[in-house]
Image 1 (cartoon, helix red, strand yellow):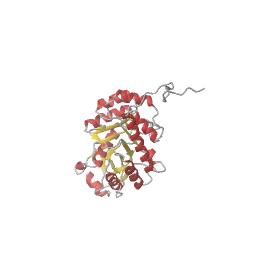
Image 2 (image 1 turned 45 degrees about the vertical axis):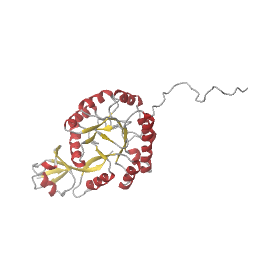
Image 3 (image 1 turned 120 degrees about the horizontal axis):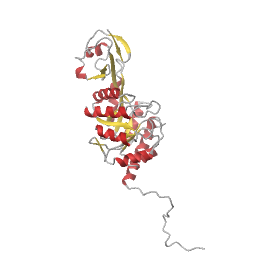
Image 4 (image 1 turned 180 degrees about the vertical axis):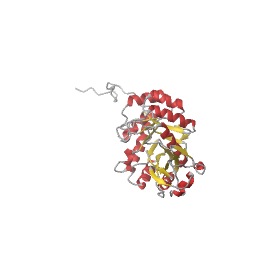
Length: 65
Length: 257
């Protein structure tokens, strides 16, 4: 199914957020996630179901002022 | 010493982590200035990049308090989601809340700021709101549950210093017991000293240090200015006056033709 990861269209076969992260190559990276604008904590990634058209945001620590 | 949400900081210097020429220079700026808080952000991570992990290790090794921000957010919902992601990543409930309302001046959106602050405070965050010197907005933010205020000195990145001293003095006088940080717009150490002399509890800046020719030296200069301003404030400065008053006694002056 087609979803968006950080604004880029991507085809994935996994259906949970946790599995999508692994399929997309994030492995065990230190990231935080949001699906369609809603924060999904680490502990809820396995139960968070991803559907076609969903927009994922995957962020990590960065410099800031 | 002022406590921020119960935390007494060893110095009144909060320093940003963006725009440095290199991670090594960033580290030197923190070590040499003894800044006690580092502001950080969250941004999109590419698969396999591991950039976030490397930056997080660098910040952890500084041994300072971490204050994540919601920089670039223009709506309450965007800021709230960003704050929640930052809390998980940085393992802190401190959040520097920015809800920008005007693209050119990066002025906070007062309505969105209050809405986001109320939601985050209810959710257990310790909110450091980036605000203006507006007294009514300050009142609303305190009502929303904020225990710290961070009024701007000038628009972010301008280096103009304290452009509205009257407004800032009024804010300080209106809420003498609320910890306040001058956040943004400072360009020179003398401006930081001025903020501390006015009675503010800390100073937060980034660009003035990161964009200096020698960031570590400039960070040290700011640290000394902040300390000088704090000492001066505690020393109870004299009141200014319009007319001259001789400091050398006139009594005993020789009568000479």
